[in-house]
Each structure stands twice: as structure tokens, then as C-alpha cells.
Length: 298
Length: 243
Image 1 (tube, rainbow over the protein chains, first blue to last red):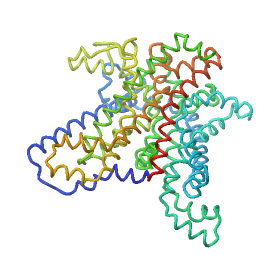
Image 2: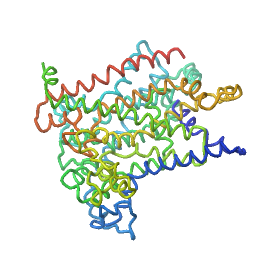
Image 3: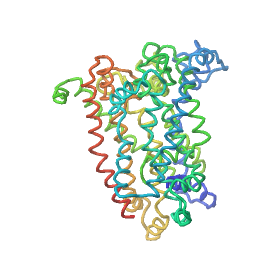
């Protein structure tokens, strides 16, 4: 269970409360650890720090030599025009991301239910091929995918992205749900079966009501990866402005020709990152669970 | 035939060797920095939750967005013209550290691995933390009672237990590295010195419109991943069945 992994990651938080006197050597190590942790903190935070401070210096207030200096006063003049430019693409991203996350979560939960509770001959093999799906690089399926899109007349609509992310998300969603359902006791299912409940009915009445945390994990995972995806977006929409999504529109602003307008670039990058950062800040625990279940170990 | 032509194509071999360089630096760097983070936090420390969330946040942001910051940080102008890291080094009188970052032939892939290491270290930290904390405390206590030093406890008791975690980390980092695209495209676009297979494939398809060649490159990426991942999945399956 990946939730157990998360509990494990967070387990020392609680244990710390017991106080104990440290001897000299231990005290030295404690100070050393805090210094090392702080250095790593500065490195980790630096890119987002310069993004934030330079986005509130106004369009022309960004100078190279003062890049690391916070602004003397807040100037949001870059935000308005950038938001005007970004709101349609970001809305489009939200539109397809919500659909693709929901659909792949539903398919994943059904698959996971079968793989966890209704094992059949060969199910392990099929599950392994599903897992391999997680490792297939985007690049390998892009050309077949465009051919499929042309055949299904999905091209030039936003549904190409819904389709791509649903297909690509199925393996990880299946894995997360399978591991999640493996934690539900078999006796529960057996008892319902003895009472004559069918496979579908058990899913609806027993499994689904217990699935909410699993859905949160999967939805967050799919939301974050689809929101941040660039390769599918640029490839499947061919860079067409009518289908610009958050990342492709951002790349249009920050792309190679416009590298001098750092105020604008930083602002646009920050605006695009806000939704996923908010999710991370408020639902970090579920985000971590998704990450750890990607490591396969149940 | 397609494939034989590929290996005779100097652009392809250039991109391939760049990718291998990138993969090496990225895997070693991420492994080391993630492990250091995990070792610093592993015994529990006040404020751990705070440090953990800061180390992990890069995973939540798109590389097209973070590329803006990194392009700035790794700007190659120097001294008073410098921005980013060169500027910091100049201010700190560490001028020998100033360099051309991803614009020089020699150091390009090393520089390009930095943002990748920055992004993935937190993930590796989380995997190792889960690993460390899955080892029962009794093992450590017993060794301590027997008079083993902290170093020996890590070397002979904890690290051997973490072998599966090491393997998982290598597989995850390796397959991410082979398909890397956004990160490099977001910072250096299609620059020649930082070209890897995914970028080259992109050019072949969009700029040259040679779909057959593009597919061949994609298949090589897939093949490189498959030869490592399939045995790994078989192994994971076996160990799971034994449980």
C-alpha cells in the first residue's frame, strides 16, 4: 500500500516528541544537519524564488544585476496583460485535464478492482504488460497516435489531448487502484458473494464507497501530469493557436525569440504553475502517495 | 535499413552520445543528492515536514515554466554582465566557478543535468526515506548495543536492506532520462550542443517531415528502456509472488 509508504515517510514526525538530552557529539551533528539542510533548502528554493520576485517588479523593472534582490515595492503591472494572454489557454487546459483525469480514474478503478480481487488465469501477465505501459516513452506512441486521430477525426479538437492522456494514464491509475484495493480485506468480498452479490454489485456497493482516497490520489496525479505536459500538447495540436493550452502558450511567450522580456516570462511561468502548486501545497500528502506508487512496490 | 542509416547519421550519434552523458550525470547526481537529503532527515529532525515539502515541490511544476528560471540562472555572460549563477559566483569572488553552462560543447550536458537533478532529488529522497523507515528500529538498536559505529551500521546493516530501493530508483531515473524532452527544450530549445534523441526526433518530424526516421528514433528510445525495464518487471513480479 502506498499509503503505508507515505505513513512511513512521515513516521518520524511523531516520534521526535520524546525529549532527550544530547551529548556534545550529538549536538554537533544536529547543528551540522541543520546547516546542510538549509543549504539544500536554498538550492531547492532558488528557481521559484527568482520567479516570484521578478514577476512583481513590473514589465520593465527587471534588471539582470538585481535578479536576486527582492523588489522595493510590489508592481503587478506584468500580471494583467499576461493573464489576458494566458486565460483562454489555461481554461482550455482545465477543460481537458478535468475530463481526462476523471475518465482515466474511473477506468483505473475498474481495472484495479479486477486485478486485485478477481484474479484470473493470466491476470498477472496482463497486469505486468500494463505496468510496462508506464515506461513506454511518449515518443514511441506519438506517430501511431496521430494516425489514429486522423482516422477517428479527432484532429483539430481538444479531444485529442483528452484521448492521449486517458490512454497514457490507464497504467498508473490501474496500479494505484490495484494496490489500494489490495488493502481491502477479501472476507468483505467473500461475504457479499455468499449473499449472492455479483461482481458489479460488489464494486458499486462495497468497493466504490471505500475508494475516495484512491480517487483523490489518482485525480491529483493525472491532473498534475496532464497540466504540466508539453510534448503531447505541442505534438498533437501541431502548435495551432486555436488549440493552445497552458504549456504551449507559455512556451510561445517564453520561447527563444523573447528571452529578453524576463519580467513577462517569469510572470507567465508563475501563473501557469499556480494551479499545480496550490494542489501540491494543500494535498501534498496525496501527491506524495501518487509519486511513491509509481515506484511499483505495493 | 532505416536503423543502419541512423547509426551512420552524425546528428543521431551526436544526440545519442549526448543522451548517454546526460543520463550518467543525471543518475549519479540525483542518486547522491537524494540520498544525502534522506540521510539528513532519516532519523527525524524538527522541521522535517517543511524541508521535505520544499525538496519535493519541483516535481509539481512543469519544466516549460521552470525552464525560464533555469535559463536565467545558467546565463553564460560573465562578471558584471552576468546574471544568475555566474553573477552569484562573481559577487562571492569565486570567479573560477563561472562558466558557459549549457552553451559550450564540453560542459553542455553536465549543465543540463543540473535542473534535472534539482527536479528529481526530492523524489529520490522520498523513496529512500520510505526505505529507511521500513527497516525495523530493532536492527539498529541491536547493532548499537553490540558496539557498532554509526558508519558501520549504515554500511553493513541499513544499505544492504535498501538494495530494492536502489534498484527502483535506478529504473525510474533511467527511463525518465532516456525520454527527456521538455526540460531541454524549455531551456535550450533546439540548440545543437544539447541535442538528445527526443529533440532530434522532434526536428526530424517537424522540420524535415521524415516520419519513418522519426519512428525509428522513437523505437530506439523504446528499445533502450525495454531492455532494462522488462527484466525489472519480471523480477518485481517474482518477488511479489513469493510474498
